[in-house]
Length: 451
Image 1 (cartoon, rainbow, N blue to C red):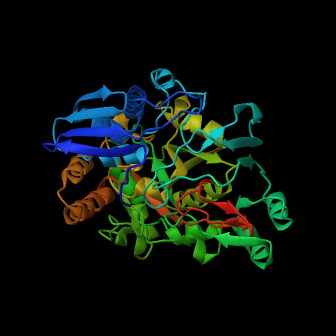
Image 2: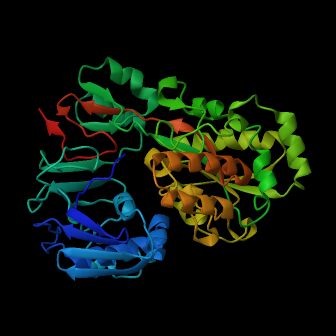
Image 3: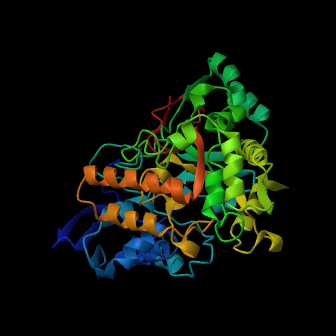
């Protein structure tokens, strides 16, 4: 959880406000052009126009400028954790792509890392391929750890094959026809018995399952109605409905990822205490709920999300919510979720989804915790107190102060209820035994070796 230099060879800070970043020599894009300061600045601006932490950083900046082709200078209005912001999400692309309208998707994949995307070999929904980028120069120093340190490609090619049927994927793993599978829990017993397969949890932070509300329209624009669900939501019931393998999930999950520095148990009894259906019904009635229709989007093609949705909807029905479950594929759901219109006009009231554990570690990266209204993540809550505490966290002088602020954030979380956490899942990956040295933290392909 410590920020390390990657694309920069180093940086200096003047007066606590001026950040000078010096790019590593030899950085090259996959299209053969050098990575220059102008590319970095254009990419930062594009990122900042959409990402919440980027917006915060640019609001605190007086200027972002190129001192020369390898030097970027950020002049901040006040002390600000620039390195934390850039390490979280600022992905660098050529300026010719980054300078386009940020509302328009970039379809030409040009990065600068150890593998390059082979666009000509992509078959949508079926296959994608990547080749080792001979122009990549790894960092000369540091230890390889998650996304930090030297990124060395030991394999020449990586192929992704989409196999929607888990039985087919399991058979391919057991036959030695695949090297890596994000395994379905139902097939773990078979994989454990195979001498051709090694199982490993490469992501200890896992994923956080959430019930997300649309705060713009009734009934969930009323925080009391959102709070009325807290006494009936049972994280263990939601998690065990997807898999009974207790090693793959945990309950007792609050605002921040369990096991990370900001996680705490402030007010957590609202979810860990005895479930109280009568209390939830009484709170819903007292909140003024009049039987309004609640449109819930259900992605039938996503097994884990589908399971979460069906169990969560059952809990909501128990307290008297008038649920209209609308089934669709995940792609359609994502498009529908972006609509701010009322449910009667094609919008929504409730969705179930997941965030990675790295996305909920602290207030800087926690997109579901933003309370800046229509600029927030889908659901668009307005939560001035949480926004105030988030700013205080960014200005905190040390770890102890950050932790204390996160306790206050979690207390306020149960008042505002931007979403309800449903638990943490930790998936198991199956590897052909010839695959070794797999990096921990996320599916990454540099560092791993074939023996």
